[in-house]
Image 1: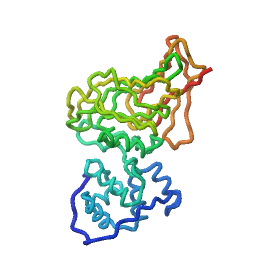
Image 2: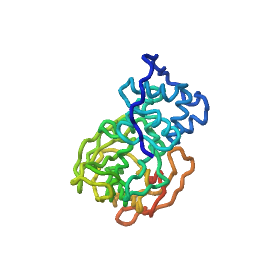
Image 3: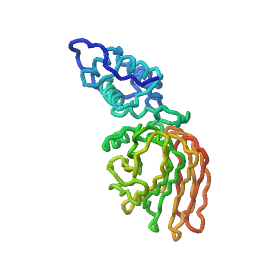
Image 4: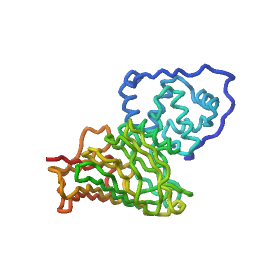
Length: 335
């Protein structure tokens, strides 16, 4: 079904602005249903609940959007709340941001629930287990805000389908997290792709890391929020890609000195056929215990774990074929 965003007929001449009071989610009509919808999604359910709670008709919503210079038809709004399609185009995402304000929702409350773009074209295939931003990030509003600093949205993270992913955390002789090495083989999901948007979260960071050692790309804009520990950056590709074309890119993120973290995780929203995770310890300082862990989503209470053992080189490794989406990580304890 197409993502329709077009102007509808003119609405009433004037209308009082919607109230902007921020009511705690648990106090909204529906109670636990509201909390679950805005925590786990899907986007369609959360949007439907918010519209129902507002008392506004779709025509009134369309009119209020139009007054803010945003075009979205009642047909598109109806499709979105029924889950028949989702907002993906830039003008549709602009409408979602405006809807959050009109419906009195916190910034990013709806945007963070939008799942990966639906596949288009013969080269693409959909991963039915794909997760939304809110299901894999602890503070989705801060995550969305940092992405916006480089003119990106969570959907920009899905400009590619992952074919393989390598993620290595570097730990130095002072037992500090020194950085991350990333290699990825990717297939473009749309035409005219010129950049790869990447995000990371490290709560122990106090100043911005550096992106170095790039291959098949070069560093572009990067933004870091010290309050939340989120960083968003872009890698400018050496060549423009069409839908279905593949590329392998590599880069390193160098952390400032003194990051005392004992966990390295990867938020997997769409599963690659192969995922390799490593922690590279200085051989002179090895941990007492290392665990691999997986959680299905941020809100999941159950966690799967597996003991890992560093080799003589100081490398701990976990390799998974077609891992399920979720939070995949390695944590360690010092003796």
